[in-house]
Amino acid sequence: MYLFTLCPYELVKYRSVSMKKIISYVVVGLFILLIAAQIGCVSAANTTPVELTIFAAASLTGVMGDLEPVFEAAHPGVNVISNLESSSTLETQIKEGAYADVYLPASTKNMDNLEKEGLITNASVTPYAINKLAIIVPKDNPAKIEGLADLAKPGVKMVSETAEVPVRRYTEQMLNKTLEDPEYGSTFVDAFRANVISEETNVAGAAAKVSLGEADVGITYYSDVTKGIADKVTIIEIPEKFNVVASYKAGVLKESKQPELSKEFITLLTSDDGKKILEEYKFSPV
Image 1 (cartoon, rainbow, N blue to C red):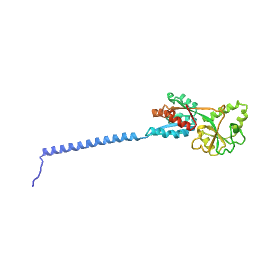
Image 2: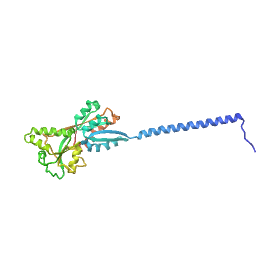
Image 3: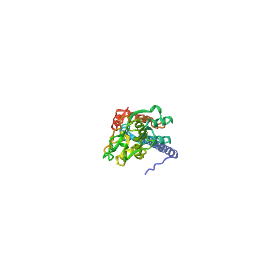
Image 4: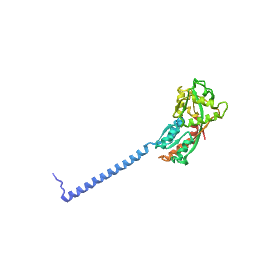
């Protein structure tokens, strides 16, 4: 039987070589783990959804519902988040520090206010549509409304909006026009106001009340007859000489973390696809 022995020098040499191999293996292993971690971080970064926040007037509810999936399909990994309220409420929220990438009010006044405050990138402001006022009644039309003059009939239950909501401002402009017409005048305006039973904080709320039969009539935009209520209400035309045109503009907030995506969203609004969606909701693209 043979015994294998190492002299002290060979033993030290053997241990030194073994230790070097172990260290090499450890270093290689750590290097591999580092690369894997970096790949994982890059992968995680690539799969983390990007949010694009749109503050849009309530009258754009239907339009936004159709635009969101179109934009997201063209931009994988991007989630569009819509805040739908009255233009004045959205303006106030932005002034008070609420984050938004894109602002879509129903009034040029609200956009102008934010431009004056230095909150909007002026070069990004883009006109994209106009809208008009419309009379809407429940499908069964319990008050037998046939035209604008009928809104002054005694007992008609009418829903309107609070003073700061753009559609209410346009309604006031319409009433001012009727004051100058001998067939309407102050008698019509006074009776019209007396029939208002509720003032909603946005136009979508007013449209909803009419669709539910909680009011006999309301004045909204054409666009507020969305797919969800189209079978529940009827639109009655306002005479052209009294109607008011609302201009819609889009703008990118200076604080936007996604300025390029924001511009691309506005580009979608003004594209053929965007115009087609706007027309479906009775907007007139510009």
